[in-house]
Length: 205
Image (cartoon, rainbow, N blue to C red):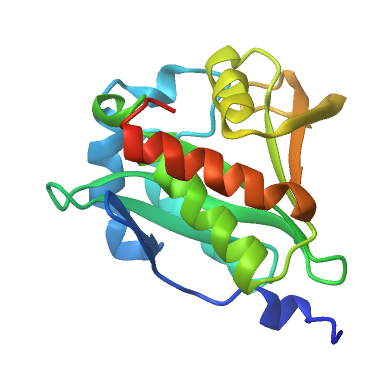
């Protein structure tokens, strides 16, 4: 099997489902992201990566710089029911040689949290990762203190690998312990069936 390079592994793509459309992040999305983050003042949650209103442009520039390096592919999340951008997510920490990546930097406006938005967005991202990019594993990482995120990742069917102690420095200078989860390729068919079933039933993620 030919191994992709960092430059060719992640290419911009739009992933569309019944509830959401994941579209490549662009600079012109700044105002829409500010509006989404304002629903719940998400930047006040110190353990998340949600940009403040004044930092949204810098957040986008950093994401696009990571994309240019071939290690990330950022998306905006658009709710198809109303056509509004309701959050953001991305592939990150991509390792082309080993066909691994992480799904992270995920946040949603308060009004769509615990809805079909997250389940379908994760389904679209994992389907593309496993079925188009031929990934051998998809990771999820979250702050030790983000109990809601940890529970949501577990409900997807991911298994906890461990905890990276003092893994990252936060914007306030504190050190973050990161909880690492993953889904491997052999588990993907069961996870896909699980998420598809939840969406058909209308269950919360």
